[in-house]
Length: 231
Image 1 (cartoon, rainbow, N blue to C red):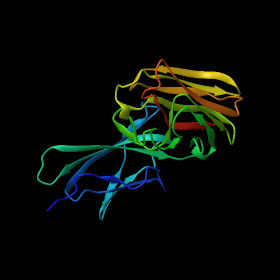
Image 2: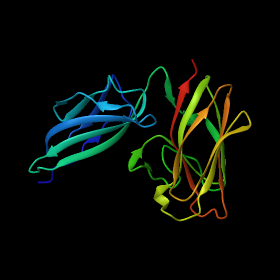
Image 3: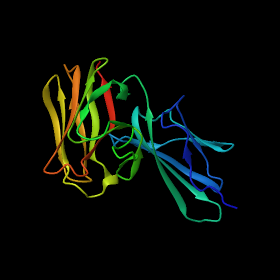
Image 4: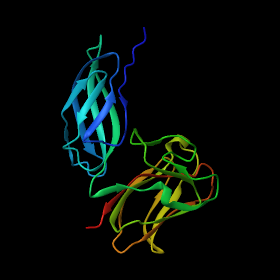
């Protein structure tokens, strides 16, 4: 009889300071639940947890706001080898907020904007992790975002789609604020770069991508966009 051997994350958004996962049927024991902040990797540690019926409940009280990598180490029945799974979760709070995709408007050379997935429809993959937040475009593209409230900064990852492999010659990513260039990233195929954008005095952003010599496979992703609110 087949038994599931993987945890399943119920919701990537932390709710009531809890992270809930459906435990695998073949689970024997859980030894650790650890975290590391996505944009501040020095923030890391372990989290308390308990098993309640078919669920693993992780206490996220000590989890920092924002996007975090969660690592679950367990053992399966009839196995002496540790099984390790990774998940990405977002903990909301007073200081940080995800970009609201419904506020984006703009154009691109091919196809249409993809919300919370890459241009070709696949999930975002970054450093081996599936990430459920962001938007996918095809160069050339330009999308405007009016800030709903003052923001101090934006952390975001510019990435060529890994689902496209090494085809194409990459693209140039730019973020403009109030009509002026703020940051840019010139990426080759399958490359990515984390960007920190100062938003003091900015009320409108524009996310731009440009093809290089060829538009082939210029699938350009803006991943894990997190705002820090102005004080």
